[in-house]
Image (cartoon, rainbow, N blue to C red; front, side, top):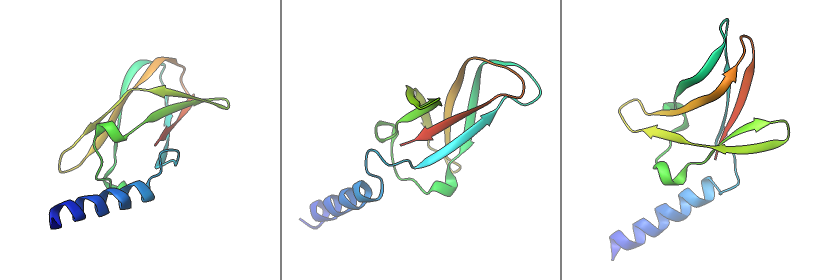
Length: 101
């Protein structure tokens, strides 16, 4: 009985801290000095202190006012990372903005 109650409380706390439409983090990725094409990107998410799994995460790239969903993968390790692909061509000096929900 105690385990069930603890699970429900943990779930409610997690749901309250990260409502489905709330942005957990925003990332800006710059191409730097070189053109990029379908480049893998990762970010250390240790500072976010997330205890979520892949099914709880949603990632979007901002294009103007539009939020376009993209695929991402969580690497759960001692230093957890979030991975995704900088899809298509990104010219040198360009920046893209991503939202994690």
